Each structure stands twice: as structure tokens, then as C-alpha cells.
Amino acid sequence: MPQGGSGPLLVGGLAAILASTCCLGPLVLISLGFSGAWIANLTALEPYRPIFIGVALIALLMAWRRIWRPPAACAPGEVCASPQVRRGYKTLYSAVALLVAIALAFPYVAPWFY
Image (cartoon, rainbow, N blue to C red):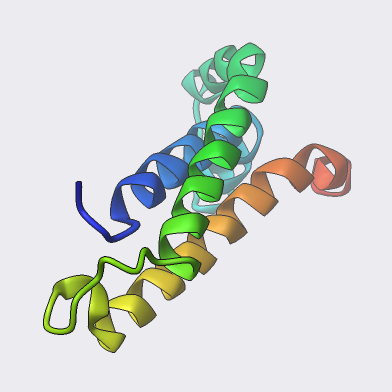
């Protein structure tokens, strides 16, 4: 099993994007100049939003445990011991956590934009 946190980060990021697709997706697409009735089809993912958010939070917890609490089995010279790799994982974790926070907060701030 790899010692890094890239697997849970990837799952968390994907779940965060899927959780915000139903609500944030149409706003982003309209802001970028896209239009069309097909944008309304993104709201079909709304019933699955709690599931996506749950998966994202579990994946973030797993990634946090791997990144900030590394196992003692990480020997010098391995990838998990490299400060650059660990810094990259921490940066990526912060970006994914921000995506999840946006997905959680968006339904409460959406009325300000629509």
C-alpha cells in the first residue's frame, strides 16, 4: 500500500466536484458564457449530493491521516519521506478541502447569486 495520500485526495476531489455539480455547475457555466436548456439537466444530481459530500468527507479524513500522521515505517530515501512530495500533498489537500467547503456552503449562499 502506498504511503502517500494521493488516492484519498483524488476520491475526495472527485466527490467534491460531483457534490457541487448540481448547484454550482450551472452558475459557473453561465458565468463563463455558456447557455442552453441542457444546463438544467445538471440538477438531476441533486438527490445524490449528500452521498457525494459524505464520500468527500471520508476521503478527506483518510487523506489527512496519511498526510499529517505518516506511519513510522517511512524510511529515509522513500517517496513518503521527501519534503517536496509531502508539501505537494499538503497543498493538494488544502485545494480539495476548499472544494469540499465550497460544496457544503454553496446552497446557503446560492440565493445571493440567483
